[in-house]
Length: 370
Ligand code: SF4
Image 1 (cartoon, helix red, strand yellow):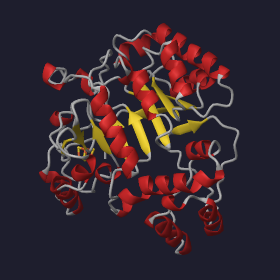
Image 2 (cartoon, rainbow, N blue to C red):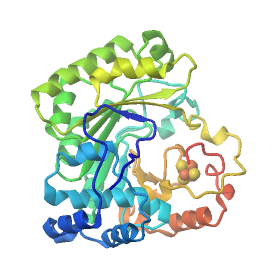
Image 3 (cartoon, protein in one colour):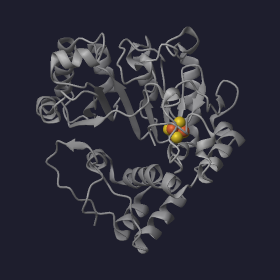
């Protein structure tokens, strides 16, 4: 029985009890009722970890919230996906295909927050800016679905909702993956988009809003209008009620960049509008390339094992801390995701990280994320 939840800085607004049975008996029961194709080597790793009392994998409240909407025969698939997502990067096990893909519909943003790469003037240049075509999006999604990706997030460098076809993108994803997430600053949250979110069963919507105070918010979220965002979030919640017991979890997430930001006030104001509220310290990623080198950073970065980013033009990357793609693995317009994920380029990057040579790679030598 897992007693603790891996909640880190997240405050969960839930009345569910903080326990989840991840015993061998329970997993065996799930195996008996799950479709055969979902059982893979992760099942054995998980059982071994339980037998050897070596299980560091925990079901968080966020995951528990998710599981409550699943049919029982789909729970094992979800648990194995979360096990791979959390444990494989720690154990340095490589999957054959990325289980988690982050897609960037656009690289630009309508805001210019100081803690974001959008405030790097050398980045907001024509050569980095653009929007993904529907054809490229479809190509990525079709391969990801066929080869077993479990989770897709819309996010990365730009604001996804400014893509004119964002609703069509969401509709195309519907029902194809276990976990679909949208990260947005909520400034463009109109009724059409809100209804599409619920109708396409997006699992998690994260609103990036850093304050409950209009003045502080507008200082941080440059060009954002607090009252407009609040209206949008209220409207989102009003419409959500029409969808009854819908599976979409709402998170309001803040980045702490100013001393005046009060975490308690933030939480107490926004909890009325979300299932989860969190505020975290900003990572050094708004100007990665000019960060000071961190000579003591030798630990391998989990992002390389955990995820792949696909940007609007098809370029792939391990992370968005490297927002100018020094580390790009290649372009999905030229190769399949599978070829890229198993390429020499990514294996070399893994080797360097595993062999304490992270300091030889820019920007891994100065990255504030991992
Ligand atoms: S730049 Fe940072 S987040 Fe990206 S792969 Fe390197 S260490 Fe990881």
